[in-house]
Image 1 (cartoon, protein in one colour):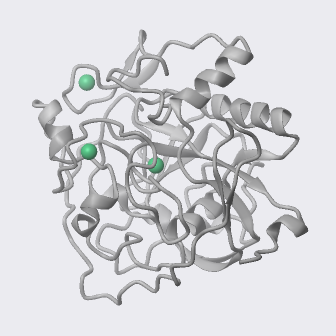
Image 2 (image 1 turned 90 degrees about the horizontal axis):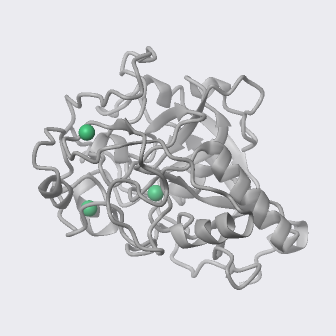
Image 3 (image 1 turned 180 degrees about the vertical axis):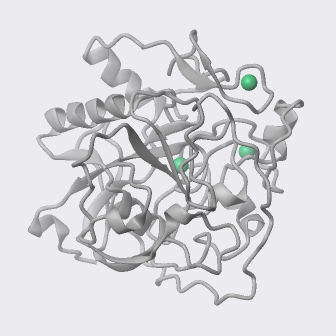
Length: 330
Ligand SMILES: [Ca+2]
Ligand SMILES: [Ca+2]
Ligand SMILES: [Ca+2]
């Protein structure tokens, strides 16, 4: 159930979002490259602004190189050219927004579920617009602790605005550069655990053998792992990245604030999202329950139509911190 992405040639696909892409040519690794430069494992500073609010992790500011290097055999052109981005200290939710959290928002704001979501109810690996699907029924079973999916970018924005009204704090989506900075957690490798996807089998919920068993006619490539979870897992089921964030790789794709840009040249280098375009599409990051290594890489950039809802796509919230809040007193 692949979302849109750009070809390795860098040309936008321009095909219908209903068509899953045929995956090919994956499998290369970069084992010979340098090991991760993960930062020290100090406990992350966390806070919750209200009893039902997402647990937020303080992400220390810094500079990083965004994108993938030309020698990455799984690289797509939209992952370059690499740029150096400086990020201010901010806070990111430890997990994706859950279905239970979204349900509380929907109930309190009398928000009816919108039906129509691109999902794979017939289990052949091809996403199709299902007019009956919604975040309450994405085509597979979920519990309140699972990430909410089948939500549009505006749904995500409205959730963040509701959280802001409830708390008096500025909740928002992550800028795309912020997302990658938070996801890397100080590492420079293909995955935050290193160069090889399968080394992280116990660290992510990707499109693995468990998924394939549930989709017997699905011919897409998978990651050679087996977590026993066919679709989404409860958020926080897997170990955190070096910054203390969970499910940053896999589980649900995560919508970001930015209007999708085909090249990193258009991404602001101060960490701010780029929102000045028509925004026909928004970026999604991190890969999901049905993705294989190429799309589970931290640098992988997909994009979906802004009004679209996908059965493998949710979001995570962030918020900026005041100067006092940003002071890290460990
Ligand atoms: Ca299908
Ligand atoms: Ca799985
Ligand atoms: Ca995720």
